Structure formats: structure tokens, C-alpha cells
Image 1 (tube, rainbow, N blue to C red):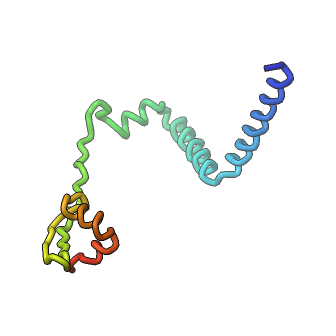
Image 2 (cartoon, rainbow, N blue to C red):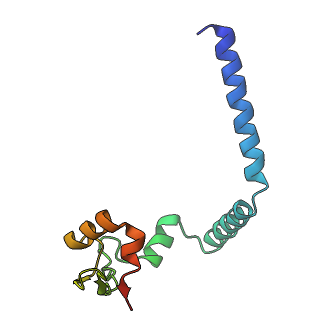
Image 3 (cartoon, rainbow, N blue to C red):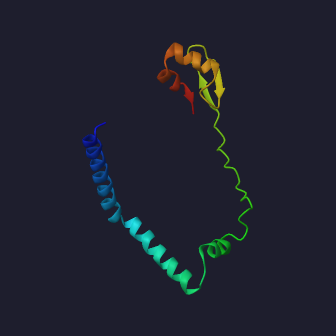
Length: 118
């Protein structure tokens, strides 16, 4: 790449970054965070505390693991499909049933879905 091409690419990249910077300057969320940071630093200076002191106050046991209960999934509902041609019933909790798949191939998914008993 020639020096001129490098210069132009760098200039375009700089202009893009300057535009991004202007967008960030006008962002309300950023303004709130900057205000919070200033107030926190002032408070830390008032009480002669460092960032490590603040972390130690907020999390006195940094090495411990916080036990989080695993999310439990909602139990799936049993669906019952009845083939009107044969009278055969299929009970399933999901759409991965072999017989249900065969019916959907033979009759079409929309038709088989209409066979769902309520």
C-alpha cells in the first residue's frame, strides 16, 4: 500500500472515530456514568478511601463463589394428536415423536397440527 493510500485510510478511520466520539459525548447514559464517577471519586477523597477499600466494603469475601440456583424449566405439556383417518392417538411432549413426524410427512404439518385435541 502506498503512503498516500495509508494516509487516506488513516484519515477516514480518524474521521469515523471522531464522529463516534461526538455521538458518545451526547449520550445521556454516558453523562450519567461520568457524573456518578465524579461524585464517587469526590466521596472517596472526602473519606480518604481507595478503590480497593470500596471493593473490600462492598464485597468482603471476594474469593467465595456465589451460589446461584439453576433456573428450572417449565414442565412441557403433553399434547395429544388423533388421526381422523385411523383413529390412532399419539401423546407427546415435543415435536420429535417418530409417529408424529411420519404423519407430518404424509399429510402435511398444518393438517397434523389441526388434529391436536384440546
